[in-house]
Every structure is written in structure tokens, then in C-alpha cells.
Image 1 (cartoon, rainbow, N blue to C red):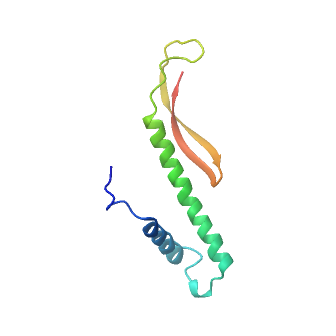
Image 2: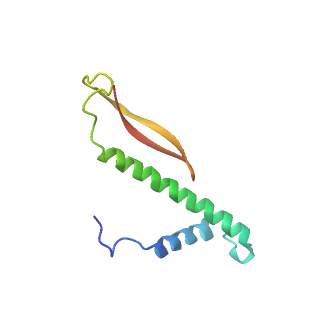
Image 3: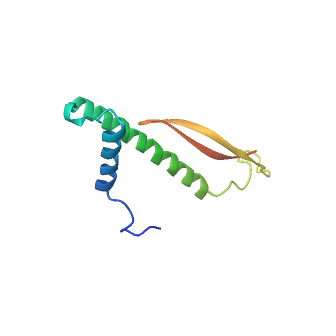
Length: 103
């Protein structure tokens, strides 16, 4: 686990988003930006960050989950198959992750 000193604060994360928006995004010419554009671009960027966080957390959740002990229907032995990609619709857009598959 990282120490509190190494964990970026919300303000530091916000500064990274601002840097990304003003260097690479539609807000590069910030002097001529209006509030609506600033808000829309900020929400779009933060939604992308949110989806990336959800993707990573779903991966960590899958890694932490114990494998099933047996088939939930018959109790028989399960064979592990290659992980399968999944996609879900979240409040912030589609998230993609891999999940273990047993048959």
C-alpha cells in the first residue's frame, strides 16, 4: 500500500486534468473559452477518468474474488477457461474489463 505522501491529493489530480485539457483539448485557447465549453470539456475528461478507474477496480475485484468451488447448479467440478472480455453500461459510459470463466 502506498503511503499518504505518495498518494496524490484531489487537488493534484485536478491539476493533471486541467493540464490535459489546456494542453491537448479544446481548452488550449483558454482565454477565449466560455463557461459552457469549460464545463462540457471538464465533464467529458472526468468521465474518461471515471471509466478508467472503474475498469481498474473491476479488474482488482476479479483478482480478489475466490474461484468458485463448484458448479452452482450441479456442484460438479469446474474447468477454467481463458478470461473473457465484458462490457457494462455505467452512469459515465461503457466500461470494459476481463473476467474469469469457468465451465
